[in-house]
Length: 113
Length: 114
Image (cartoon, rainbow over all chains, first blue to last red; front, side, top):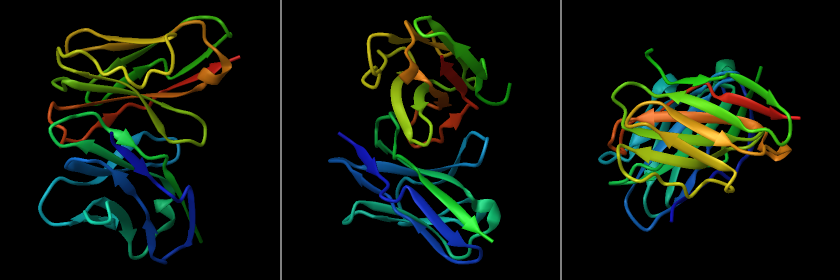
């Protein structure tokens, strides 16, 4: 069975500071990993995904994530956040060869001016 | 349309009534997902359709919940005898058949049971 854990439900950070949103997964097989973002009053949209190859993945809006197989983690990072990054961020996992997509409980990022 | 369309966008219903939520996926997407998002919480998987295969219903919380999909088109999620704890935003997403492709989400249906 697969599961996704996002330990931090809320992360406040000052504007222009770096941020890391944590994501850990559990799976006995190979997985694909995703980060989705939900801006206030909007639907979810894909930030980035890891399928294979380079463990450092770059996404939209300056975000990146690093896949660490030994630690079963896929943490999301941004070196300098902006007010417009305030949103809910969801980590998701699916088993390679399958399609069912499981989400974590989300991390609410609040950027403080 | 170009995206995933859900209707209605808002639904207020009385406890005990049945409701039907609709999802129009992106044309050509064989995979379709339903999720529930309670206030302040994450996405709870409900059901997953993939082409003509048997759906994965493992996330449906009770037998009051059911969903159907006609081929690779419209899906309806039905909640019978609604309860107040059913109040949530119900999200639909679709994707191409491969698991490595992006899932596109609709704006959701906000269900309020009073």
